[in-house]
Length: 314
Image 1 (cartoon, rainbow, N blue to C red):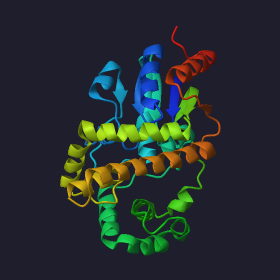
Image 2: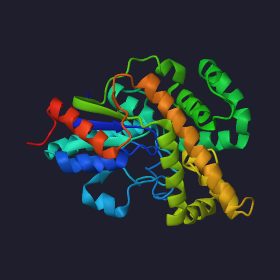
Image 3: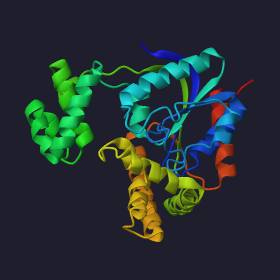
Image 4: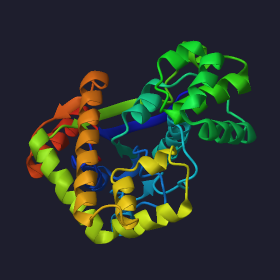
């Protein structure tokens, strides 16, 4: 059953497009509470590295699902969507407007469209499979090919996270993940949504991303990278793929200069933003896109759009 959430604002966009700042303005304007839809801002160890809102910003309005996971504890899109739907229902119950903001397109899809109703995987089995896949490396692709040939054909041998997921589902349920994915999904939320996609000019976005990464390094990203390195986590874990993390760890190990690490982190960020833009253009075609570069101008357009939808607080 879908969670009734009344009116809600959903804000998507590539990294450095100004989503968090817009969410804060809308929270003030609408009487809203902010819900994270960024897969990296879930991790408590990396506030700076993931450009999570600052503690001061989080104190302005209620923020939900930020810094809730340890880096060793991945959270699937489906499990995030269930939690987000519950939080949105609670926000609506308080008479406030849920404002969901992030750049993880799959999270929004899971929330709005739903995902295959796969039963929960026992924690012990999940741990066993993850350890088995980590030990086998790319050789684990052969295990997946045996358990789920159709899924294996669509997954690269280097994608250990998805390989482990396919194996654990097959072992836990006796049914292939590729078969589960054919079951029609059900939306997790029901209500009246303003779906906003920010899409600044690519050159503007690159300049913002480059400048932001330099600020992140100045504001503590190196200390967070050192703390992450000290955890000695499996490199295939999602948290270890945080933008710029690996280049900074290599610098801390004496393998590169700081300048080289910053350049590599900036390059990772630009490449990721490009992938996000591609996802939005192909997978989020029903969203209303705002292209203006000036934040004051685009925010005025967005406020007018929301007013027209009747979401403005009376």
